[in-house]
Image (cartoon, rainbow, N blue to C red):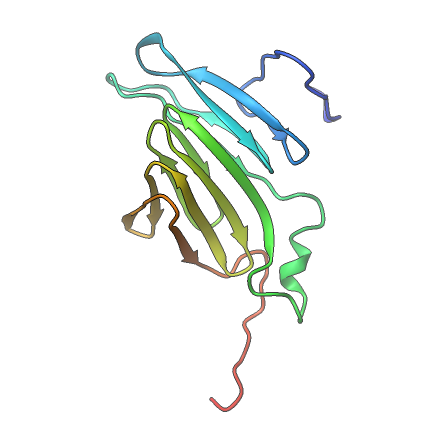
Length: 168
């Protein structure tokens, strides 16, 4: 229950709701899965919060990895000369089980054995599939992203200013 960061050097038990900073390393996360089995993921390159709902009627309990913004990074999108594609936060996941990454504009869920990267940028949330299939929930529909493909859900994030094009 402290607000000070605690370095993880070996095996540790993290509570649901813990915020993990894996920008300078990676973490192997193991959570409860379906029918008493465990599921695992290797997570790197970002800050995230661990969340998990209770399993319902034989369905696997998905573990949510909610992206968190590093201090001061959100201001990059509010500047007048901010790059449209400026990455504010990112996360790379290699999962065996049901894991879902939650970006600002869209959540992404990988199939078991999938690897993907998600990045919140000034112009939206970009999901790139590395291995396996990744489902991205965009508005009212689900888009399946195949390996070596990416999908951008457009949204103005982090106070991004609308750029006006001259002559219109």
